[in-house]
Image 1 (cartoon, rainbow, N blue to C red):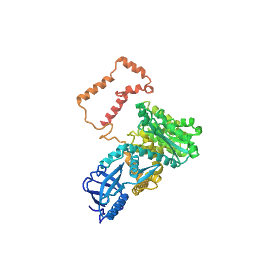
Image 2 (image 1 turned 90 degrees about the vertical axis):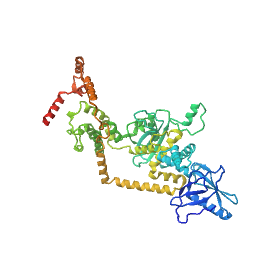
Image 3 (image 1 turned 45 degrees about the horizontal axis):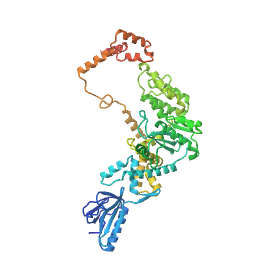
Image 4 (image 1 turned 45 degrees about the vertical axis):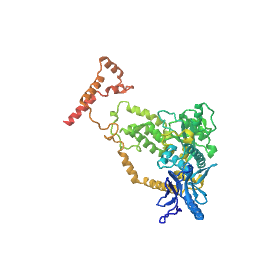
Amino acid sequence: HRQLSPHPHHHHQLSNVVLTTDTHKIVRIIIPSCFFFYLMINTYTDCLYTTNGNRIVSLKLLGNYIQDLTSHAAHCKHPMQFLGESRRIGLSSVFAARCTKCSAILKMHTTEMLKLGEQSHYSVNLGAVLGQIATGGGGAHLEEQMMSMDIPSLSTHSFVGLEKSLGTAFAELVTEQLLAACTVIVDGGWSKRSHKHSYNANSGVGVIFGAHTKKLLFIGVRNKYCSTCSIAKHKDTPVPSHQCYKNWSKSSCSMESDIIVEGFKRSEAMHGLRYLWMIGDGDSSVHLSVSISVPYGRYVQKVECSNHAVKCSSKIRQLAKGMKCAIAQHSVTKIVTDLRHDLRNCPRHCFGDHQHCCGSFLNTNDLIPESLEQLPPGLLRAVDTVGDRLVAKAAQLIHNKTTNLCENFMSIRCKMDGGKFFNRIQSGSFNHRCMAAALRVQCGLKWTAHVWEALFHSVGETLDTHCNRRKRKQTLDSARKICQKYKKQRLLSKSGTCQQDPSYGDTPAEQDISRSELNRLCDEYLARLILNEQQQQAIAIRTAEQAHDPTGEWARQRHGRLTASYEFYISSVEKRLI
């Protein structure tokens, strides 16, 4: 037997380490920078103690434990026998060593205890759950990571319990961080991808941001499902006492409106203000619900998000770019009539007709070199019809405001619930992660350090260093992105993103089809074009108005046939080639 002693040539500041043990007679404690301790032990056969696998150990507690062992061994003048792990609580453990003379047992907790609410938890367990929330993981992700390092992980029950405790603390911290404003930005989101196909998400979240302070004013969550209630109903048993997160029974589409209305109703009680201007997108009936349900709702004015309005009005890249440019220019003059004129004239401007363009809006760069006469019949009229909704909202678009603050929150929340790929609606996990995302938005990159300091009045040195490093990196990136050189590089990198590559895309380069297959396709195509006399007369009657045909059949019948116009074009090409 030998007493514990540090390596004589290495001295390093203590932090956290991983303790590696096996069933041999030597236990080696691995510490960064080659700082070793050795302890000779006898193989202990008592089933109450474990010496297998790796453990996470606080170096501060380990140093104190080694000092206690050394002092006791010096007092008894006999070596200490390491028994192993006597107890494990999640990622934390209790080690035990026995004196070979007096049989006294000295124990050590591998990590510190922290008080959260009315209960105490080991710091490593709280940190592991907080880390999984911050990165969008769950109990299964933590277990997979720990198992690959041969470290016993938290049980599912323990992970859920710690997540609930942290979620309650998140909600209290978010309430303390809320600020007041008069002009607000609102938006909502669901727990899974439902837009334009299913609309049946079981959970949804809505947020209200202050346009001036850029801080969160209100956050609400709606849940249509509770796992405890569902299991009791399925088994036909009484529902046990539990914290039920189910607070919604209507459709998923109405979650956003209900949350925003609640935020407006509580604005006077929470902040002593009324939200008289509301910036939002046009994909829900939030403004109508606010005007009906909120006591001062009839005074609330709606400002449309220019990004959503343009995106929903046109999928043509050049047309959307022209509309966005018109909104940006007239947001300075605040003349709504001029904005309506330019939005109505935008299709003709983009296709090269500048007869009705205003001087400030006329820009011939990057225009489509195509005259209006060459457009398919009815296309321009169809584009004008689509743009009517945007023209009608010119008064709400004149401010050129966006909901980017809310979209930023939604992206952070999406990251924290695993990118909407995992079911987080059970046991309130979706609620807790929404509150964590709110803290991330309110406190910035150092939000984990803020949580640790607010709950336990101390921040670990490693965590503090990591947060400061991320903050410095963000400052350097912000300074780099505002310089003109970076902006020019971004424009150059985007210039070729829409070009078709023959190696990939909708029409990649492929091997030519065989001659027999080509002949078959030609015969089928010609068979569809050949019509009998009765069919020809019927089509002639239906397409008598030609280009003015409201059904568009005249254009469809012309497509694919060699008409006089195509013959003139082919003869012109032949003359140039000759």
